[in-house]
Image (tube, rainbow, N blue to C red; front, side):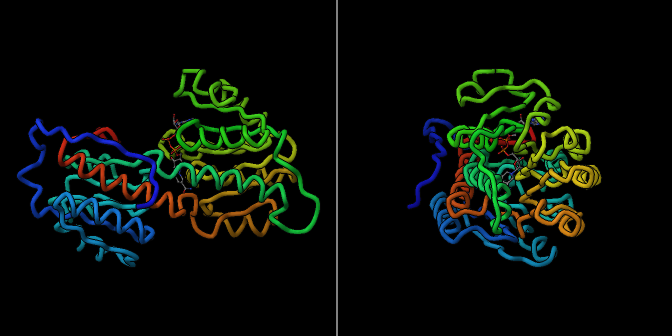
Length: 332
Ligand code: NAD
């Protein structure tokens, strides 16, 4: 078996089984337009079949009706970036739980799920290392002129500013620190300064300060109604000379008009992203080597992250059905 970040749960034998009467014949659908690595699928199947469930696999589906058909008799669904909308839930009368194997869950209509009594979970932290490694790699890629000939620069000694100090942000902070960067971070939801200090990271108290000091700004905020389009002209314009914005979070958090304006006015600014912007063609044409987008989101695309997140999703489903564990529920 591959090494995985341990997800632990205890079977409490004395406790009555949560959904005992439902376990037999329950169907768990793995619906992934972009499939898991084969090893991950094997591990998911093993966990679920050992627990007594039937497993169905829908991979690389190309149209909506395929998904609607596959969910029609599913009790639980494991997804990746697949969209679980009100329409999908309406087509799934038995659905009790959706687990997004990954961190962001903006692809699931969680309000509709709550209305229908469907539990939605994510698997926080399971793919964070993969994303953090990519963020560091992106900084170096831009510092070395996208690997084209010419003199580049080093990241050691530069200020790495981390916007949101969650699972990914922390790993980026630690790795940046280990590479000799001066690391600062902003996260208004973490009041304990020790969380930052333990990683050798300086906590800053405003987003304005964070951007104004960033040689590299690594973005790790989730896409929420509060954060959508929140990174725009004013913040970008305030960044130091030669600064690079690194986005491994979500495209929706960027105000693209503001981004184009800032890159136009400031010929020293750079933008690299793992999530192609809507204005990707315009950005490529106007800003050449100051802009780069990965061809397809690849932050979590490592075998290790696939396996960690996929197996955690399967275990969380078993733990929910057997013990009623809702620790990772995001729509309570
Ligand atoms: P996380 O939930 O562990 O951390 C998110 C952090 O954001 C939390 O610490 C929270 O306090 C903070 N936050 C929330 N709103 C904020 C705000 N308005 N201002 C500042 N901080 C705020 O999530 P994570 O695992 O670190 O992932 C971060 C984001 O990265 C995810 O939301 C997801 O969108 C994205 N992601 C992308 C990939 C990829 O393939 N590129 C993979 C995993 C995650």
